[in-house]
Length: 214
Image (cartoon, rainbow, N blue to C red; front, side):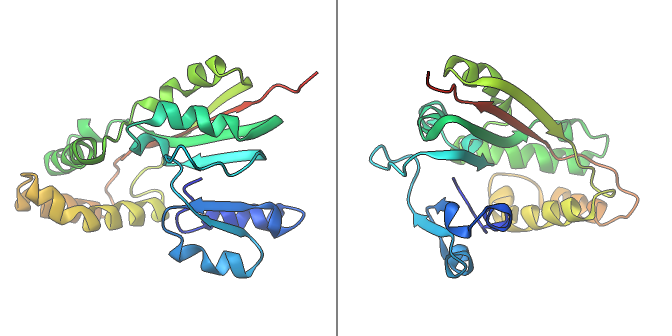
């Protein structure tokens, strides 16, 4: 759910018995066309729409989706209802991990402004993932687990590029929200320094299994 560019859907299709066992859902499916050509079922839909009922699956997965939804509790309940008995619900979201406490002032100000901008514009919450184990338990799921991964800028090249692209795409909104251009430019310069060692967020993944019917 929230398949985005389709990277994870493509991987699932590669390990499934057949690509048509994978369904990729997103409001914008422009990047999923190649997957459809390979047999993946691509569905253009809004998972927040109460009328949307995709069916039931052995695995339902959402990455960096719930944290950006204001009605995340209701959507989480619906995600769980789409899992077959004995199936898995897997949720990954960003978890606050200290970017706002960096000793580098410009980076600290830029990251603080970024998360504030997301919270104020679309309601993003970098703390909600910590509540998923409790929420899944309350929904009746079992075998609950939680794993976190904390990439470091300067040590993980792909993540460093991801952060650079994220800030570049957000530049206009950040400056419009009051971040000084000098602070933004200094933060970007800092991130381009190979010796920089910063965190942006941890990715926390929570999972649970629906009970098997007697």
